[in-house]
Image (cartoon, rainbow, N blue to C red; front, side, top):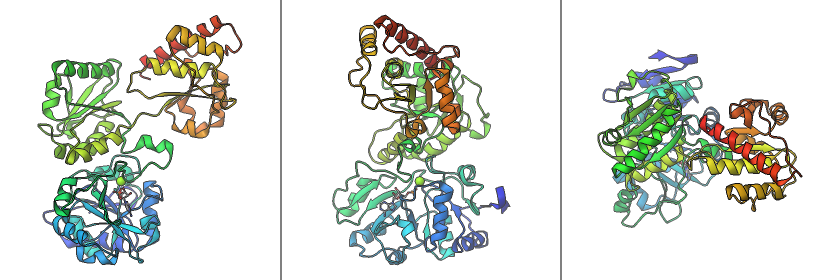
Length: 514
Ligand code: AMP
Ligand code: MG
């Protein structure tokens, strides 16, 4: 046993040779209301005694998890199911026979004894019987049901190795049991059995076909299947499973032309001094022919990478959703640690486990936070800037949006702005309507770009917490002296000159990496 940050105890356990004395202090702490992170076959869980509402409340607090996102209750043995669920349908028992212990979570009507905070007030409860020998033994020794979400900060990739937990929660929990890397690397399949019509709410390593084979009927996957940390506020949707780096999904190139295009895309990033990370199978990486540092042995990685470098992490020899899933979250975290600006991750066919892999990868690669252009009225300069930015950016880049400090909501773009963009760029601003700048818009934005220095100062004074995201467009373009004065009521020529100046600055901003 070793003591880590602030009294955290890290316990290393060999899953093949578990000694109860190693786990007993953690089991006891768990029973008495402390938080214990432990390995499961899916991801590392952050456990609390499910019968202790105050302990469960701490899970939400340390993760920063929205309180309306329910937790999964973990039990050692299917015999204990009726302690947390009621009206258990025969199908549940058949599925447990087939898949428990294992990476399958069942949603069932909830027993009255389960505290509200565990289920976020729902009248159903999610239950799972983990197969990992360390998790099982811990649950047996704790002798209480354990509510446990993934042991990460909400919004970051789920933890599949002990260091992932340490990095996110090391200063906030009592125990971390290190049982090595997780076997599956993706969270459990969540199956709703509470309505008489089984539905997969979250795809996982036990597939729809696996379940259908036991159920004897097709089991659909909810189209909006979502996971823990479901977006509750618009800003959060950008940070689901997401590393700091942007993540682009690429399909394994099927032709030399596609290979060249992808290699070219990577070069565009590294050529601008950015660090690119690749997550793919060895066969795809070799096919690319891009000059990359191989990260096959992460221990050899240099942190951070020199600018303009490309690193590759091979999850396995050939395309394989099981192997890719096992390494996905680890790969994202590792590449983030190397300060990658962009991660190119291999997409795989969406069937079987591939569906679960792509479900997580898509969330990790949600669009980047928008670039918000700000002027006074949101009828001339900022709508022109946003439209020009959207014209000039790469399709996969963050979208451009606009708002005004003193806008009259609903006002259309000015005639001059509409005519200038139509004539010189064939862009229509016909559907633009002015809107006021709000805190929500600013919270969501990755860059907040004003037209003048005065506007920037006003915004920075209003939102000092966002000061480092607020710049003038000129500053963001490397030309700090370039203010864009209001062309309002000027001649069409005046608007055209304004548009041309905006174009120049936006091109410079994009060249600097956006
Ligand atoms: P995590 O513990 O982070 O793996 O997340 C637990 C997942 O189970 C989330 O997707 C929850 O929304 C889902 N879940 C937990 N309890 C319920 C429930 N009673 N009904 C539906 N989904 C649930
Ligand atoms: Mg989670």
